[in-house]
Image 1 (cartoon, helix red, strand yellow):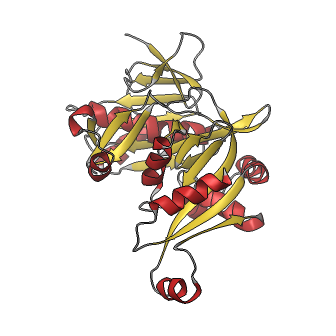
Image 2 (cartoon, one colour):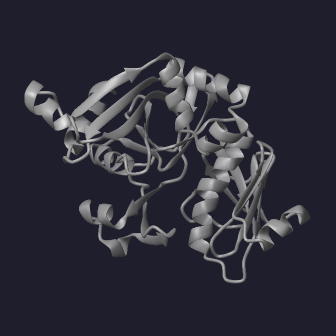
Length: 311
């Protein structure tokens, strides 16, 4: 069977599944292997009952894709894929690169964040926040202002010789239909990947940085309720966007809340001590800022301007 080699999240990946969106790598000893195979027997019942996910702490995990394809991740180094009778390959590869590789990194004990990573020319910055906070929109605007592209949606961070590093993922950015139209990109030049949310993929070799970068700043984007803010703006002259630096426990809580599978840590397993040590290192190295914007007003320009002022 054909074997492909890629550099994904800074790891050499050997795969029996081709990834057209990933950066090819020379053959060599793989840190992660993606193979076709059967699911372990103990997971057969879960699949038959229609369950969607299962995890064994930080050792192994399983999930089912909507087309029936099943994925088993173990030991932070191996992903086994059992295809369904009618596999949706674009959906499968997209989820392997996001959820599959996220589980690999978590099993390796490394922080893996929800968010976008960009390169300022000197350092990496992370844009985090809940769904709808504006991460993709702000990232797109910053890219148009000539920042470099490291990662979209999920970011691997790990220790390096000079400090904590943000690794490039692969040169592809996901866009919703509205954002694709707003940035003037013809839809026919994009790849429709669906993922149940009407998403498109844009290959970003034009601005992709292939090397890891020292993590410098993390920006948590948040929309605030309109109630009370409008009066404050009118009466005190306050801006519709505020930014403040977070320190101490608040900074650690913010980092923890932006981890991939944060709810699992919060309500089930807790954060393992080695992972918490790395979060403490990140908090000590990177400036962590909360960017709050008024939710009923177009504040994109103000948000981007404030972020650039702190970079």
